[in-house]
Length: 185
Figure (cartoon, rainbow, N blue to C red):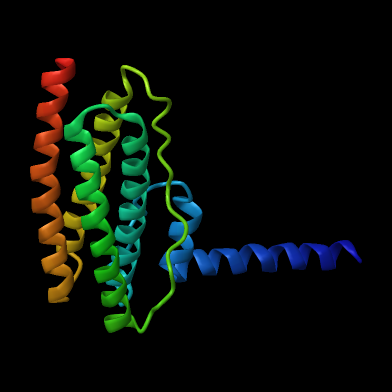
């Protein structure tokens, strides 16, 4: 291959990536946020709600994974009760989000990639690591849901975002109280 042909090939590849990055928010988000629990939602376009639903499914899958770790590692009944509640509610929420994706976008693609939060071994600080991870986890979903309120006109999504904000804000307060009572933090 001649140097000019190789140069043209490289330039074409770079232009193709640039166009894909600029024109497809999902592509840009995937490149920019590969390991983030909550991806950037991007511009308020025709797929904003779909990206939010996918984010929330991944968010719930991450929470379920953390709660399964907690059930194996905690000795506190409060944490066990919380874990069982979150697993139940998030499993129901995932089913609801898949239904919204199907209703609004005819999208039945399953979300299988999500962040895994490693909470470490069961020791005297396990519950503290869990509380800190859950507080951050809730903050990410609250922030994403507040952003959604300014970017969507779908009533289903507005209701969902408001519910997420209300539930996770209340739950976060409980987590902060436990952290203060158990670890004086």
